[in-house]
Image (cartoon, rainbow, N blue to C red):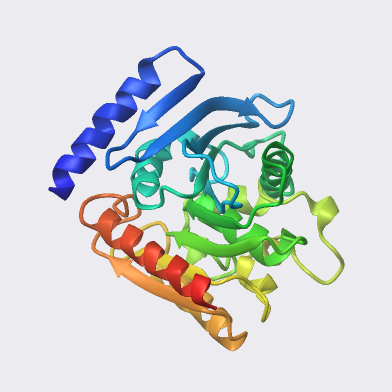
Length: 286
């Protein structure tokens, strides 16, 4: 049954992608309807665009927002990579608003940070203006997008609106000797962080490591790592869990069978979504 649902979602996704309208109605069954607005500009750069999914049913209740952030080594990738997973999440969380965002990519002429965390901030400001209230946020990213989700939540969320982070195969400690085997590590060292934003006493790699900014008031974090991931070493999960434990931050960590790109394959995706649902319910009870 779940396999049939995924096939239906994929078919619907292709239909939405190939229709020319900017605004769309999405029906996911079981009286689940969303209004979708594609490629909303939140800045002047062509990469500063996002897709917005709003529950069609209007209520006076302020809705929380999932912000979905793609991977790609900070220098590649596109929001379209997570369209199918976003649709699956919408089916599980029909009362939430969803954003699937692009961000400015790092290159030989442009640093990744602070541009990429600034882009998350810009999206939150757009949402605040569009919705008429400052929503609570759940940041969900994979790989580089998970890194940016954690870094924003732990360091740059000055408004304290991030209520949870969903970290999928994300690097959390860039100084980890195991992560230095990453084939693009030289690019990370030279182009991820603008040296002008670091303060005396902290390296660029330290500045960009989410574990360095974890405090007792950091948001609950759910992590998901592959047991045969050749990109992100298992030490990343251990270092992140250790830092969250030391600061007494609510967190959960799970492993799936597979490599770096296998997290959204069945049954890994179903397991993850169920765990996200449990986490959100537990946070709501606090």
